[in-house]
Amino acid sequence: MFTSELKYIFKHDQSQIRILLGIILIPAFYAVIFLSSLWNPYQETKNLPVAVVNEDRAVKNNDTTIDFGKQITKSLKKNKSLNFKFISKSKAHNDLNTGKVYMIIQIPKEFSKQSSDLTEPNAKRIKLDYYTSAGHSFVAMKMSTTAIEKIQRQINDKISKLYLTELVKRNNASETILKQTILNAKNSTQLQIIGQSIHPSNVTSKIIDPIKLVHHDSTYVKNNGTSMAPYLMSVALFVGCITLNIIYDTYTPHNDPKNGLAWWLSKMLFLYGFIIIAASIMYGLLVSFCGLEPLQILKTYEFVILTGVTFLSIVTFFNLIFGMTGAWLMLLFMIIQLGGSAGTYPIELSNNFFKTIHPYLPMTISVNAFRSTISIGNSILSETFIFLILFIIFNLFTIIFFNIKEYDKKSSTTGS
Image 1 (spheres, rainbow, N blue to C red):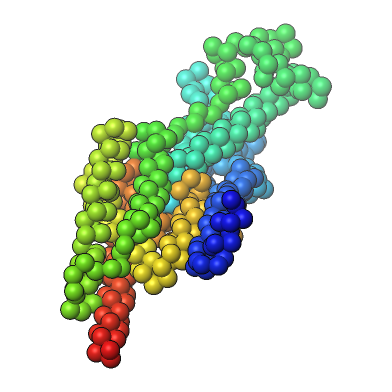
Image 2: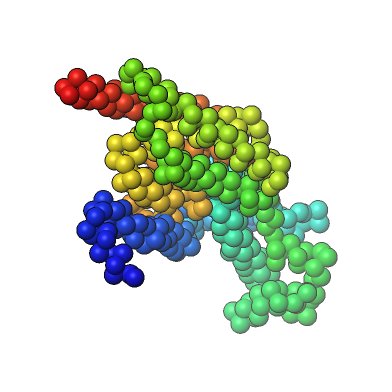
């Protein structure tokens, strides 16, 4: 049975061979291309850009100058766990809002002063502000939060050791006692220093755990579904356009068009109506059934429609030019976009190939626009302009294609 089917294909349907060879590679392309873009993202966090803003001012304490802000930045410059960028406050917040960095660590002006006053009766834990943008990347926000907690522990150790060193010096203790003191402070409920007990209710807790992290995030990401919606909406619309082109005859007119424009109108108006309805159903169900709550409901819907008709214009053009091979190319292009549009992990955690193509992919543009309208609230004017240009260009190409076909058809009729 298998061999007879194979013999028939080779003998009677050579075009089917090319299609089958293309299809046989799709699972491999899908698995290899997509997974290679995010093969080991947690090993690539050294490329995740994080801004550090140091506003701390050094203070004098007896004969010692305390400048924790400088110490922290110096330590982070040696730290390769993230891509730390030491920039001004205004630039840092601008970069966060535009997705150029994924977190800001902001060391306040009074950091060193507060660090030196922890033994005062009214002293409070030292606030360390950090800012994230979950709307740009929910995963990056989670990674950044984990990283700042490690940094918090490191700073706590530095401040604790400073105080414990001073305390031991006053009692003329040895290095062994210092180590034991630190150990007791970390592992017990009270700090023991040569028979003297300082209870957590007073100073100890502030010395052991002096840093209080304060998290700021101006974006709106209610849950994981909200963070994934921009990506999956884009993928769903592209898949819909490919499927429509495979199943429906986008070439043969059902009337006798006078020119390429009339031919384009007869086919594309129907196709656009179809994809607009499909996109509207998708968006309506996401809002009503899944509970998607975009910041800008109308803008999100408008861009859903624009994305649908733009993707359809691109896919249909290649399908008309290359036939089923065009549909196969668009499927391959979609797989590449899955890896390169940074829909799941930040593009900084991917390999160089996907980093290079990332800015030029249509799906990158749609994902960025949906993130803005759903969670961030930024303008999508540039994304709208780019998609309108793509829509016009590919439809002009399609009209030219139909014009050529209409001319060829008339020429052959006249010739006969």
